[in-house]
Length: 399
Image (cartoon, rainbow, N blue to C red; front, side, top):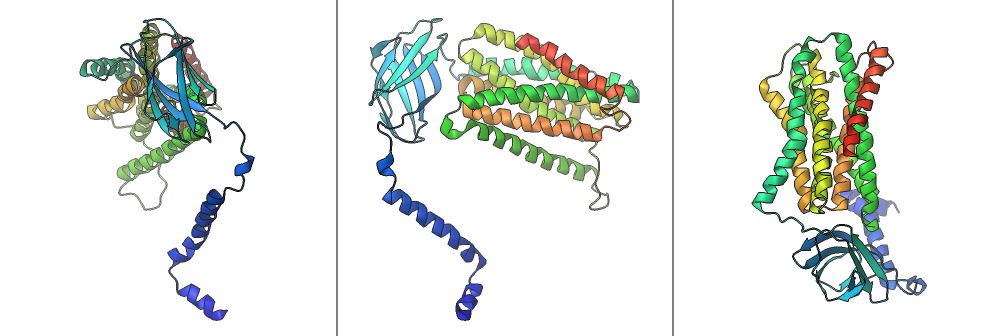
């Protein structure tokens, strides 16, 4: 026994640690090979197919499918508006988690609804409805430019206008600065609720097997960790000569960059919404969203510059340009993603990232506020409520 123990002690640590993993792998392989519960499977098989994306080309409907269930699914027939139609599919038998593309030649009419039903080999139905038929935009140079201009109008320009409040904040008293910091938390609090609601709604539209809620949570966690690393990096740069191990408060400029990053990730979600609306043919809704978001986002520039009012040194113009780009430019990427490659799972991840970023920024601002002018004070409570109500009122434009 002692000899066996001494031999184990001489083995490399990675080899000892790999033994339990190897046993687990062998157990899984044995279970899948023997399949002891195979006789208990339900008959007919469990069929679940998710339509992840619908594209309308000239006289053609293209559907992207994913097998959302435990069993293979075979697409046997296709109905469009309750009539059988010809179709082609990349792989008629779709295995678990596999994807397939269905092409249906059909002379659809612009502005009219489309009801599509895929019939499986067992007689099951996979239904998908297109409320308003419209030609899906192609990713050519002119369309890319249009979507980029929309992102510019929704995100970059309103944020840049909001940054112009900085000179007024520089002249404000400490009470007013505290008010606007609390006002910023109110703004971000509303954005956080809005982002979480949108993300959870998209998570329900994600294929069940991909677990949209977990995707949303992973995005939020990744944003918190990533921005925490970013914050530490900014603090190390600013306090490179400080005593090692000393805890340092985040500077106004660093906090402004954190706010800009959180708002930028949220604006990417807004770009996704506008891009997806336009791609789905909802031009009127898209126009309404563009105008609404442009008005709504002007106050985001105020939220970014609010922490800068207390800094003794005025940031250079380069920082203001960078802050505007960090907060506004992601809207362009969101508009492209929503218009040309919208997917509920990726959208859930994007909104999760935005929610995590905004939550961390709210925590950082709250931590930086003084006890005298915190949320328990009259000025702090009033600013928090005013910021939330302001975003609610302007948000009614996009409802």
